[in-house]
Length: 368
Image (cartoon, rainbow, N blue to C red; front, side):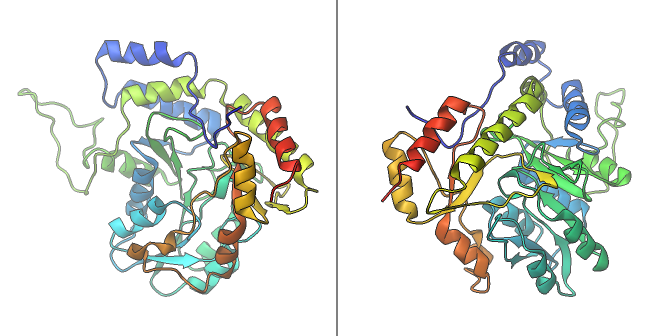
């Protein structure tokens, strides 16, 4: 048996739906994009959804909308992918690393408080593996210090925090539709925008700063517009949106299957020597893009599963090790500890109960 750490899910209806768009030759942003945005809002609670060509574009656009500028500071965890930090550098702002909670990989509220300075403009929590951060506490810290919250929700499509979807919790939340995420558009992303005026601004800035819906062509054929805001070519296209619409079919059922598999892992692995499972609180539901744990003798664990055809993997070791961010921050005690023991096992749309049992049984055999 061969079980990879990730898979790419394509719904059976995708071929027909995408083919219709291709045959129409209307490939760029259009009505299919608007339909996809509406479905994301309806099915997954993404407030004022604005689709984009990548999750990284979503992060950058959110920073622009939040007014993050040169020499401002944005607090993030080091436990993330480099895109989180690079989007901040695009704005010539400074990345400030807070520590994480060892039990979850999510940003530590206490550490965030310690990192705030007069230059801090925003907090960018990452819902690690799809498990929601402590959003009530983070939003309270932000409100007290007049800061913006921009959630990096690349892992968290469909995650729920205290009865609300991620995408309904703060000013901005940024999602990814990259190939191995829960839902793919080939590559793409979206942003939730709490404020209606900012939502309008997002729609304009994603297409060069032109208000596309109201830039009517003149008699000579050129659109009439006057750009007043710096814009970008960040929009999603119709064929990506069509793939996304197809892959939304049965999304909640697939998400529930991930949660079922996760519950099985928790039940079966919680008493295995050498393993410490990540924390799971009852007031939130992970989207389970990842299933993580801490293990003793991690290399032996990985080798043992590899021999059985199972991929176990470290995912995104601390990004502050990259010189572009200034190098490793020695003060991040939990991050250092996390890096030494974190590992993830497969949990995706290709995992059924038979494969989950195979994974568990091989773990229970032990490793050396």
